[in-house]
Image (tube, rainbow, N blue to C red; front, side, top):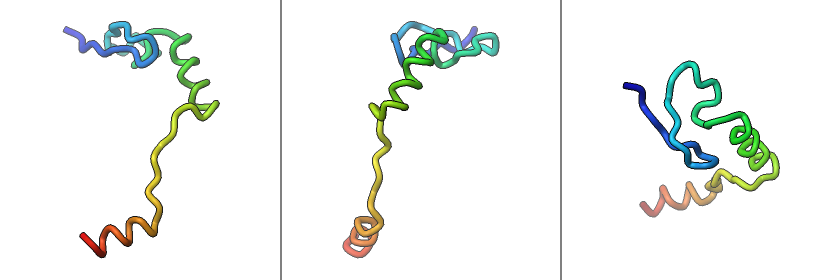
Length: 60
């Protein structure tokens, strides 16, 4: 039995199998929409400033 995941784009159930070249997406369309969102900077990765890390380590 294949593992199923939800497409990050449309939330459709997707089988995690080798023949699904778009995994974890259900289609090329969902994959391209997600790529476009990254390109438009709609997603961000949080960054911890170096000074915050130093302060955290000193007090913790």
